[in-house]
Image 1 (cartoon, rainbow, N blue to C red):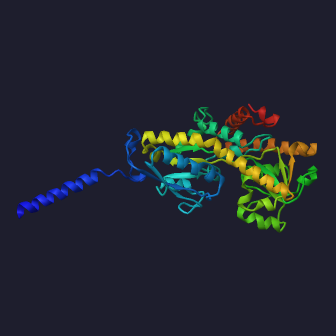
Image 2 (image 1 turned 60 degrees about the horizontal axis):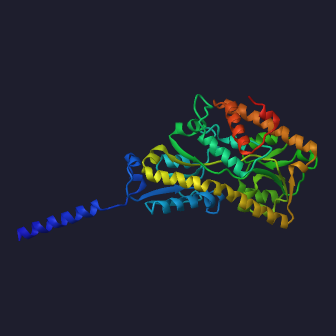
Image 3 (image 1 turned 30 degrees about the vertical axis):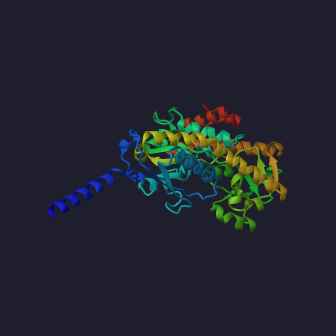
Length: 380
């Protein structure tokens, strides 16, 4: 009997050991840093936090297809657990969320909302005389990947992200911001001065002040009711985002052909977390980001085209900048120039090099097909 009992115990022990050694599933948070150099067959689950809704252009246009491609090309070795609309980490708190290990991926991180930690991020919001989503997206990607030193011998990426132990990938920027109103038109400079517009960023506030426009700061979700009551005339806003708040039924006059900046964001992980991912999976993730980058930008263009067609069918009016009165055009362009120089001073006050930053951003935009006023071209 003793012999049989010992034999049974040994058999069970062998079976248990075999079962444990055969397990192929692990959570991404348990991956060691050595995994970056070892192509394993373990399943890696990555937790994704996003402040975006499931219908947002960045989510539908980039992150969903990116995750689907990564899962497909790793044969399911990578799985994503996604939380949208700030349900896991409150929107704008994504950096703290990935640092604390609450999430593995910030989808996306919004550096523009955190100028104290990212003093150069607002550069893409500078107004331009010509640009579009693809031009700005390509230029922003090149800015993030640039090897040009702009601050104490550091590149934009090093100064803004690497010094904070972050691994980031540039995302397509939003479509350009336009000025849209509930019907107020800009037929003369006097129609511009004294108008009140909602401003989504400090750069827009600088620009508005330069052209004599009053400003209102409020959450986008509150704008529809306020404008419906006539509290203010309009807003700087991206056409592709109108349907998120019903603005396609409210905005009746839009100036296009002059550009009031592009909002940027980045895919972000901590360096530690990124380095814990096996190198072959890293390659798949990078390739998927490249593959989805321009389709992600084109999603904004597609949405804008649909919204514009709807607006035109329902009484909306779109005026090209070149069709405005010459004095109005000059007034707007002078505001663009003033804003660039004010932004240089602002960046310098934060301890960064504003001149080198805007020169690099300007040059990348021009190379991609964008345009800026002559005074900005003369910055040396």
